[in-house]
Every structure is written in C-alpha cells, then in structure tokens.
Image (cartoon, rainbow, N blue to C red):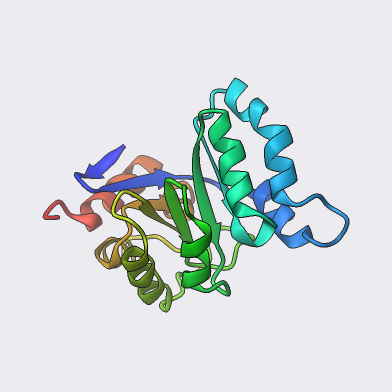
Length: 182
C-alpha cells in the first residue's frame, strides 16, 4: 500500500530462511547463487513477483540477479550492518532495490541502529535514481519518518504493527508518522 507518492510501507514477519542461509554460508550449504538458480521457479509458481537476497550469502551477486531476471522476477539485494554501503551498492548492479538492514538479522523487535540513517543516505547517493532503497529493522513511529527522509522509499515494519493489540491502528500510526508532505 502506498503511503506517499514516493514511500511505501511494507509489512513483514521475519524472513528466517534467508537469514539461515546467510548464517550457514561456508558450512557445507550451497551459496545463494546456486540456490537462486534451482529454487526460483517455485517462487514464480507460488505467485511471487520478486526475490531479495543477502549479498553476504551469495558468492556471485551478478549471476544471482541475472538468474532471477531470466524468470521475469524483480530482484533486490539486502545487506547487513557490517557490510559496507559501497560493497552493497557495487554488487547491486541490475537490482530493482537495495535493502539496508537497520538491525542485525535474526529476530523481530530489535531497536533501530542509529548509524543506519547515515548508511541509508550514503546508499541513496550511490544508487541510480530508479533503484529503490528499502529499510528493514526497528521501523516504528519514532524512526519511520527519519528513515524516509534519509532516502528510504520502501519501509518494512513487523513488530510495530503485528505486536499490537490492534494491528490496523499500528499501521495507521506509521502512515501518519511518515506524513504526506514529501
């Protein structure tokens, strides 16, 4: 659902499968680029229209992006707080979006890492205009507007909505916090 002309609020629960692959890289599990080539048809047949993967879990991001593209899917590249913005931006050639993690992946409800605001600004400055900047982690009423102002146009919220007694009210509070003057 569009929040403003240039910002979208997404809701999501933890993406545990993606995180497990990132944690187990180098421990006998296939790299993400191998997984991408063999499993993306099931994403398509299930009705999915895009795939986002972590650069840290992929030996060859350009190959993975190309493999996803051959199926007609959109593609995003995510990166963890320890990965440099420059590395992520360089690896994202051909991606539709780059997802800046503003927490350490693993569980919902973590606090937004304040240094992520500078990372979001830097990322936005390095990417071509048509590539969207997504932020995941710690997005709530006190961080959503600043993340958007730093350059994010896709904002992922989980616990700020789903840990509420009234998820619809939580969503509306986030929409109001983003504002519509952009």
